[in-house]
Amino acid sequence: MSRVRAFLTLSTVPTSQDVGLLLLRLWLGVSMVTLHGLGKVERLQADSVQFADPFGFGVGASLTLATMAEAGASVLLALGLGTRWAALALSVTMTTAFVFAHGMALSGERSGELPFVYAAGFVAVLVMGPGRYSVDARLPSA
View 1 (cartoon, rainbow, N blue to C red):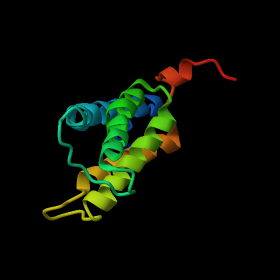
View 2: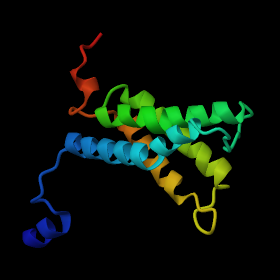
View 3: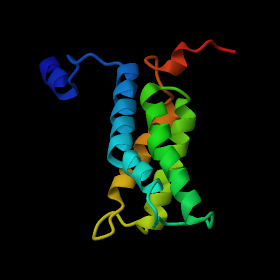
C-alpha cells in the first residue's frame, strides 16, 4: 500500500516551495515580458496608437501603464525584486484586460482565458511572496 501512496503522491520527488516560487516567477515573468511587454514597448513608439482606455486616463497613458507592468514589472517579478509590488501591478493589469478587453469571457472569439490564468499566477505570487531564491530575500531587513 505504501508504494501505491508513494506513486500517487509522487513522494519520491523532492519538494521545495522556494524552488516552486522561483520557477513560477521566472515562467510568468519571462513569458509576460517576451510575449506581451516587448510588443507594447514597440506600440508606444508607433505614430498612431490604438489601445483600450477603460479608466478614462487617455489611450497613451493606458498603454504606458500596461507597458510598465507587462515589460517592467515582469522583469522585476522574474528577478524577485519588489516582487509583491510587481505581482500587484501585473494582477491589476491582467484583471483589467480580462474584464474590459475580453468582457470576462473564458471561451469564444474574445476569450480572456490567458489574462485570467496570468492573473491567477500573479495573485499566487502576491500572496506567497518571492521565496528564498530572489533578490528580495537578499536585501537587508529593516
